[in-house]
Amino acid sequence: MTAETTAGPAADPHAALPARPIDPARFTEEATYRPTRLPVERASTLIPDAYCAPEFFALEQERVFATGWVAVGCTADVDRPGACVVVDVAGRSIIVTRNRHGELRGFHNVCRHRATRLLDADTREVGRRGRIRCPYHNWTYDTDGTCLGTPLFEGSDVPAGQEAIFDTSGAREFDRADFGLLPASVDTWGFLLFVNLAPDPAPLTDHLGDLPDRFAGYRLEQWVPQRRRSYDVAANHKLVGENFMEYYHLPWVHPELNQVSRFSDHYRWQGPGMYTGMCTTPVSRNTGAGGWDGLAPLSTLGDGDADAGRFVYLFPGTALVVLPNHAFVLFNRPVAANRTAETAVLLAHPESLDDPAAEAGLDQLEEFWDLINRQDLEIVERVQEGIENPAYRGGRMCFRFEEPLHRFQNMIADRMLGIDRVPGGDEDTMTRMFPDPAQPHPSAAP
Image (cartoon, rainbow, N blue to C red; front, side, top):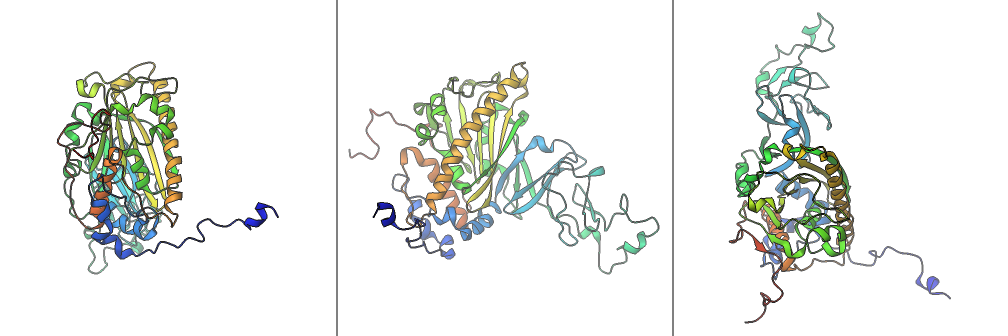
């Protein structure tokens, strides 16, 4: 008898393992996060259910994504009256546009009559004369959210002379002024567009903390999208984000990036704010495998910015990279506990584009970022597969590399517990992430 026949038929390797019991009540209890609350050198990761349980995902949508500022796109997409984007935040469809005065406005993508979705996901203009029409009964709104007609007959298919049949002016105790679009708070910073679904949100500046000051020299509000790509990721959004926050994996996952992003050049770059941050300096030159070069750098950057790369993960789901000559953003939208829709945007300052070779430079940068991103997504999908194994009950942090993850996971824990708190920052402007090997280990006995 061969070994193959002795082993019997192929079986699910997880089948014999006891399932992890899912108790949604635990997700809002402080004790659940106690191991993650410990100092990073002693801390454990978030529980596996945080990455694969539909019950955790549903609660997270409400407590994390529906309660704070979420970056949803670029300001260039709503650069004039009537331009709009339709975005998804915490499972809600939101319209972001500008009114006739150029002021930013946000609305739930819901007709006030019988809740019809007003605009399709790919809509880029609100409609003729800046009007948002419901495709069901032609209730119509302007870009300030005001209800203009119930229905608005102008431009409709109602035959002339039959408008009175549909006229609602005689409806009892009904005033269309009470039925404007449901508002959502919107704001901008630099080239980023934000939405907040909370009824009375704190200012975006509270969320950003010291980032506007740290990025002041880049003039981010002038940068313009040049390339976009979309990725469907079979992994939880937090795994995508946590991968971005650490460089522990570089030698094994990114052989090309490892040549132009040296370990010794990495610093933690975190002040107060809802973000995690790293800095690399000096910026390495390209190798044959690619790199950050390709466009001319912005000429007005100060000494600290002119030779540094800034890597920021904006809570809860946006990766922001700013280098002297380009920026790269990943908008990570949770779709399910084990699925994330990711949009990658490559941006540049107009000054960097004023070069005959700029188009070729953008092509090179897009190709390099696509390579790096696909390597990352392949590995986080493998993590997702592993974290769903019932045998895994959580892991330990590695303090030298994973302090930003610790900061991020505690932000998640705060929101799941209903705690509204903005983390503070390091005392030093930049903290070396990889200590000099000649120095004693921080945990070593004196």
